[in-house]
Image (cartoon, rainbow, N blue to C red; front, side, top):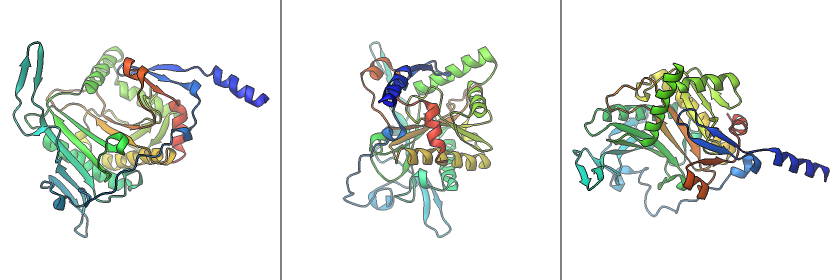
Length: 341
């Protein structure tokens, strides 16, 4: 009885915190008083319906996919990774931009490129791949990025990975997507502006500042190797959010070298693997944030990967304010994730 009262008092004494993103200035709520344990975030992912026909990504030639844009093969001749155009693209490939005006409104045709990066094994997601296999995926990301960045209609390229129905993956087979478009994402614009403002005030990269602090303090650090660190951000928007970031100042993902690809493959696999084990295979998204390819220079930016597990649903407060709520401290989340690295 006494112990129960003590726990109740301790819970009441835990005040929620408002934490500000050092880059964008956005606020998040870390709801300490809700007292969730790591196991409370484990959710059984929604199951995919049984396939009526062959998996389109296991047998792309037999299911009407277009010709490969890129293919990597193993020593036995079978493919290990391939890149194909999206059969149902969000953007019209390679067409000229036509601007649209209607009264006070302005728009343009949705032109660009939409591609799918597919790994061979239907049942092996990134969490259980070898780091060198993840490095091959990164190599494919870089190859396609470099090929598309100079196209006339392309000013920005987003590379992302959806795992699970709740994360937007309509096909179960592990795959990533690339979209090359003429406009810069508002979120990237916010980060670019924040990085420049911070540099003007402090004469230092804001991302390097974060990396140095996390490496020194280590309470939110999950993993590091020679070239990368993985950590739960101070102002995590979601429970168990993880960032993977180069230790050295690097504005452009596409300039990654072979040694860095190997280290990034390890850091990304370790991060996703620890999330997979801690939360028992949750749905998640990850994406690469890098400088735009619009011909301008972005020396103050620092490319990185953000991994967001699906542990909660936006409701009225989040939707009406844009302020996200995380129900576990990133320090505690990192402590749990470190157990499985």
